[in-house]
Length: 407
Length: 113
Image (cartoon, rainbow over all chains, first blue to last red):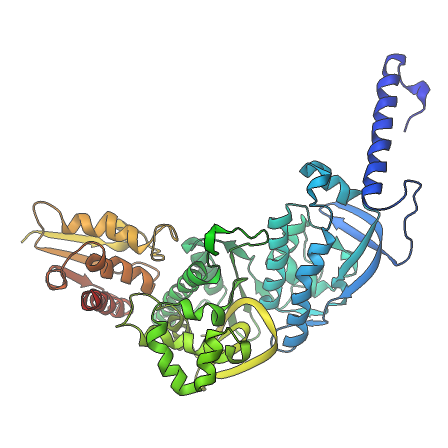
């Protein structure tokens, strides 16, 4: 601040009133946070660097939640999903108080959060050594959802200490765009090309076409008829599968609550990305939603009543009872049943034909894998192999569909 | 013979989408209401409506079912009339299955009516 003599006489009163208002505002904010205006800020904890866009601040943090070192659903499923289950609460707590209506307008709320000299909790991205596209998509969806609900700018912590490969993966995915951070690649191009994630509420044919064309464009440029025909076949099957998957999200993942009840933290969207790994020639496409999950929605699917007896015979009476009571002990069987439903219910209902289409994608490839994870269930279909069903301990919030194919 | 040819890719969209207008821009409902029904109800009546399937990215099953099964369910057509009047053409073998499925959806919709 300048000395008084630097201001013209007529302006001093205005400046003094402005400074007094700022001081009063700061006292009110600190009182609301339960702290004394004298600057009695708790100094326990550690120093961290907080970054939002180009703004970097140094603050104190009291509690650190480290991220899993290997953020991969194949190699480290339980730890990753366990972490993601707690992440939503952790993000909500970081905005705690800022969305309180007592504080007033959005501008005031932003100033409250921006003015905090310390963080109670923060998630330590620097402990993560490796992250895969599927896991990164779920992570991005949680922060995207928070941005939608709280309408507040997001921040990253200790960004300078993140692993370069993790930074590159999250940057390519578009995760850092959520924080207003632009990154040139930190070191030699990492192994995977990853597309920026797409998200929406309705079926987006253009986004599906973009992902498919971008990925097929990364394959080697053989232009003989057989190669072109193979790519076209894969493109057609992938297009149909992705549109059907989006339709399933629209129809089943976020059912309307009775009486038109609105839920504050309800973000009825899908998130999608794709990746290409040059070393193996593998294409990956992932679609994720944060909905009620396939096992919970299954009784509402058209044609379920006609197919239920078939699966009750296959899996026994406990399966039928579990579906009715939304018991998660048969989630893997429920997903498998859902993938068979379209085939079986053709004559009984004009709807419910989507999930079998997803398996057709892997039929167009030399090798392919379709994995559907929903709540505790995990079913994998692989070319030339029998389906593998797994029941996990920790439930995934929503449904993840992942195709990994090689032409 | 009075013939009407509908090329889905150029007369509607290269990216057929979901089932209903509220879910998707290029929905089966929109194709049925804005393209198919006007062709089928045209005066003077067309003897044949040829639907060319090539040139699109793909036909999701819900699109086909709503477009063609919906002719029976929503528009009140009879399957015998539609099977006789509608002809599907596909140069690429990729779309032959879709032609078969569209015909099946017409027959299935009539069966459950």
